Length: 222
Length: 258
Image 1 (cartoon, rainbow over the protein chains, first blue to last red):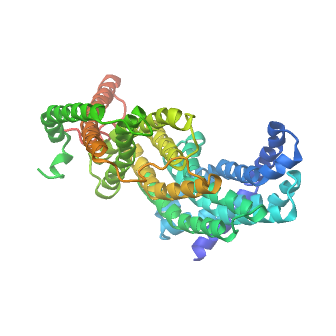
Image 2: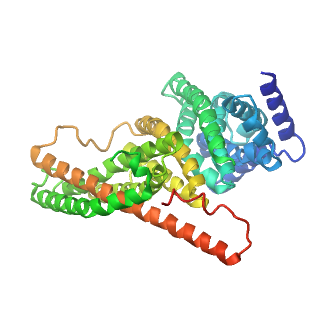
């Protein structure tokens, strides 16, 4: 447990310090949301209607952008090999790394959502609904994305390949995240059903993600 | 001859050389019979002659999912048993599966033009088949990203298995999303039991297309083994030319070339 705690603390510290780049994800999120009115026009009514979708797409893309850093830096300086060979089960170590990554890169997106909601003319209920669904959904994005990050690091490729592999797998999270937000804002469906499925998707990804990433690291690193 | 014996690529090549002409013959006979029966089948009272697209479309759609299943079993073979031919099988199946998926989309869209008045409809089935197609392409991109086949094989095996777990989830989500946005479904195929005059040609075509897949798969596996042998020979030759170059990875990477 202390080993995992130390791993989480170390990863968060590295991510937040100079050169870590976790907060660039938030900046990217902001930039994507600011770009949207230029594409669809400064029509506030339209932006309100599209708001949850824009916020979810922005969060999806920026969580994808930071995923590259999950294993690459550790692979470059050799500490990934130590993690793989250590006595802590690799599945748990992967889960700890993903949790640290979410705390450093995913949670700031949720915190930034209310500010960005103002730009899109969302009212308090809508902003709260989107922030709540992002809080429940972004862990799934991180844990599913971890599989792609592990595959990419064993093949010394990142970037576009990672995006192409991970995006189709994150479609269910996007569907239920946006659906739950819309249900809370305009109805007619109850908020509970899609939100519960979103939480279920996150829980499933907690199981699949670490095991798949650990298998890929164990088989792929040499 | 058990599965273990086939681990020797030379034995597999010998078996493939014996089997391929017969497989090809069965495929041609079945597809010819299927096409003849399809042409003989009566027109649908609502859809007219366009119903005959179904005889091509349904086998392709069925195989698009079946091939992912074959790849998943092969991936288990790669990760669990380290069967030398498993990654060859998985790699050879991916482009074939992508082609079947593409043909299913293409024929579906050609059918949709006269029936729905549009080539593309964000219908639940079409959308999930499109996502399946994207995943096939991603898998092929993964195979092409690295030149070392054994390394690529393990990464692709993990992705294939994750995909096999995720595909039902994606299918369910897309169905849910679709009913949310389109309460009245456009299409209700198979709502009633198929008439025998449609069912028999469809089954013959399905078996024919399955044999087409087996034939193409065995041939593609044979090509992949030969390609790997050529590659290892080239590397040996390059090493022989460069003389004192360090004895490198050339020998370890062939799928146990005899």
